[in-house]
Image (tube, rainbow, N blue to C red; front, side, top):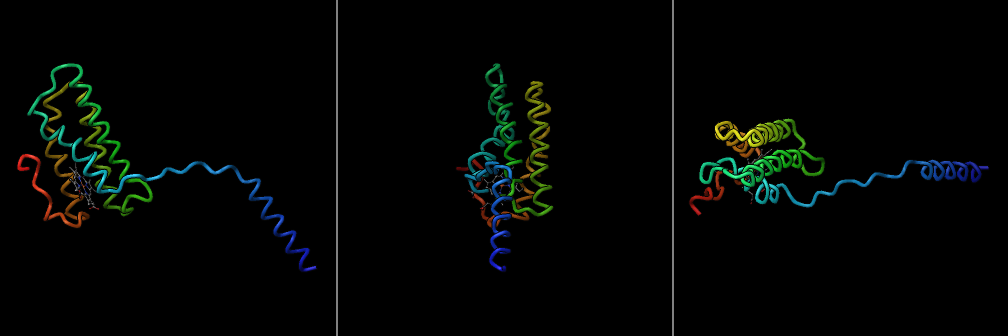
Length: 149
Ligand code: HEC
């Protein structure tokens, strides 16, 4: 009797598992936070910090700049993803600020508004610094900015 009940239960479990909708493919983090910082966020934000070194002139230049700011905005989203983010409120707030300021920069690049891009520089710098002060383990020993390399 017990065995029959167990078999029925097992059958129910198997049946419901079989009837469950197919699992969606899950995203798979590839780079670490440090990789995304070093390889994406750092170079893409330099396009904003140092925009006056070679100000955009041609269509190509403007499109490239807009693409970089779009990449920067979306990398803010990347560091908010489950499995990669620190998943604390402050982290999410700082990452979201990076998304917002980058989105403004993207809009300014599409509008070809160089003044607006430059004006975002302090806010961008603050968005990096605020998060690093709280979460970067070696913040005070960071490598010098690219000028000094
Ligand atoms: C939401 C938090 C957050 C924001 C926003 C953020 N960072 Fe970071 N960043 C980190 C953390 C955490 C590390 C340390 C990662 C590690 O070593 O594991 C880091 C490390 C770095 C590093 C060193 C990577 C290495 O090789 O160790 C650079 C460069 C960097 N960030 C640049 C930037 C710049 C530029 C910005 C702004 C445009 C920025 N980050 C915004 C959290 C943030």
